[in-house]
Length: 113
Image 1 (cartoon, rainbow, N blue to C red):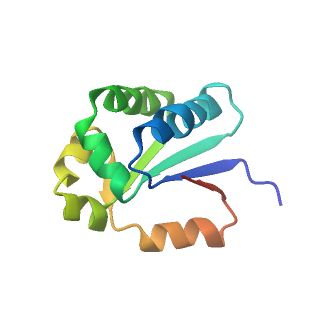
Image 2: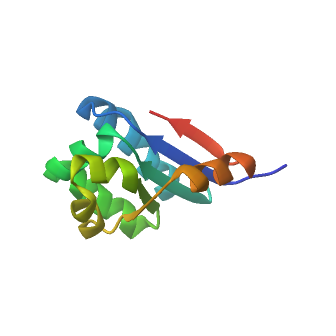
């Protein structure tokens, strides 16, 4: 089975994890065509961090411009009160349980941080 899609599941509220791994790899994976399709899912504490960090928000805009699909867990972002902030960044905020399950069942390559 050849699958050229990558899903990055970002759950960490640690800024260093975001800058030194998640954002670096996700953006380069698309820019350098390591993967045909790249999706970033913002889930849990990462949603709060992203809503508060202007530098990370700029990177999200760069990811969007590169064609990376951006999604966020609505249940989590609602709990942190940041759903509107994430939507304003161009992230599709929705309940992610079923979509994540679908990614897994389809055999997508999934990285978690």
